[in-house]
Image 1 (cartoon, each protein chain N blue to C red):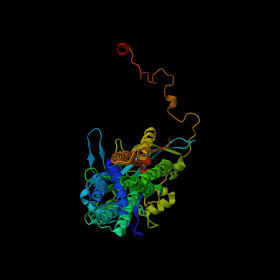
Image 2: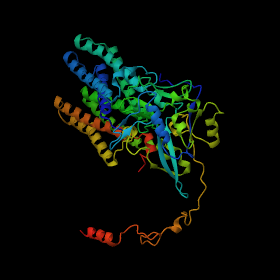
Image 3: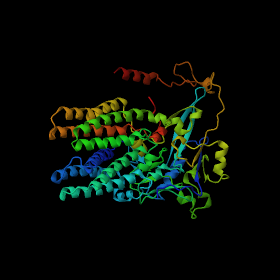
Length: 294
Length: 261
C-alpha cells in the first residue's frame, strides 16, 4: 500500500495522543492546574493534529462531517464518532481539573476507555481488510493499542511502565511482522487464485491493461525492497524501544532525557508505521502480477 | 446507508466469456465514452496527450498467459469491472453512506454528492474495480450502465450496458442472475462458471465463463507450418535472395567505414 504521509502522521500521532489521554483520565500522572494544562495540551495537540492530518488525503474534505453517520457498519465512521466522544468527555474532565481543581474520577475513567476504543477503531480500519492479508490478523488491533499505551506511558512520565511496555511493544511488533510475512500466502494470494485460471496452468501477466500507471497501482501496488525493509525494521526496533529504554533506565531522570527518549520513540513509531503501509500487499495487485513470492 | 440489504429482488450482472474475449478493448472505450458523459462526474484523464497519461476507467482488460507444463501457452484476455458483489465489502466500509447496494436490482453505486474521497472502499475491493477520480476527488465505479438499462429514451436494443452492447465478439452478456432461466444463469450453469476469487468471500454476482479446453497440439517436431519455407542456413539471406541483415556494395563499405571511426 502507498505509505501516504497524511495517514502515517494521523495514525501515529493520534495514537500517541489518545494513549496519553487514557493515562490522564485515570489520574496518571497526578497533576492539577498549569501542569495538568500542559499535559492535556500535548495530548489534544497530538490527537487533534493527527485527526486533522487524516483529512488531508480526502478528495472532498468539505463533506467530512458526513463520515459520522455510518457507525453501524463502518470502522472509519466509528473511529470518527469515538474520537469526538472521547475528546469531549476528556475535555470536561480536563476543564474541571485545570480550572476548578475538581477531580471527576468516573468521567475520567469513561474518557480513558473511550480513548482506547478510538485507537481500537483506528486499528480496525486496517485490520478488517481481507484484501490486505498482512493487516487482516488479530495482532493488528493489539499492536495499535500497545503503541498507544506505550506512547501514553512515555509521555506521562511513567519510566518503568514505559520501559516494560516498550519491551512488550517490540515483541508484538516483531510478531506482527513475522506473522504478516506469511499472511498473503495463507490467504491464497496468488495470481492463479485471483484469476481463477490456476486449473489451466501457471499464470503470468502477458499484457498490462494500460501502458502507464493508474490509481490502483499508485495506491495499492507499492513494493518495498526486502533489504530496505529489513534495515528499516532494525531501525524501527532500535528507535522505538531499545534506545529509549536504555536512555530512561541508565540516565538520571530529567526533562532532557525524557524529551530525547520521546523523540527517539517517535522516530521508531514513524519508521514502523511507514513499513506497516509500505510492506502491505493488496490482493488486487495480483491481477497486475505483483507480489510474486521470491 | 452502508448496511447491505439482506437480499435483492434481482441480481443484475454480467457473464463474461473468457473463451471468446479477443482483448480488443472496445468495451473499455465504449464504457469510458458512455460513462464520462452521463451518470455522475466525468472520467477524467491527466496528461492525456503527454508522456505519462493516467486516467479513470471503470473497465480494464488484463491479458494473461497460462502455461501448463506439457502444453503450449494459452492467452486469456480478462475483462475486469465491478462484480456487484452480494457481500460487497466496499459498501460496508464507507463512512458516509455514499456507497450502497440497491435492493431492487443489486447494483452497487456511489452517491457522489456524499463521497468524501477517502478511498477506503477501493482498499476493500479485492478486484481493483474502484478508482478515485483525480479531478473530482470522488470514487468512480461501474454502474452497470444504470442510466442505459432502464432508459426509455433509448431504443430497446440499446438498453444494456455499454460494454455488452459494443462487444464485437459477443463475449459479454447482461442479465438477471436471480432468475435461473435467464440467459446469463443458463450460460453460467452450462459452462461451469465460477465466482472470481472466492477466497475473498465477496459473493460476486458477475460470473466468468472459463476458457474451453484446447485441443492438444503435438509439440514433438515442427509445429510451425511455415518453417520449411524459412531460411535456416544462417547466412542472413531469405528465400528471395535479398539481404536482410548486412548491406553490400557501397552501403556495405559505408557501414564498415563508419563502424571503424
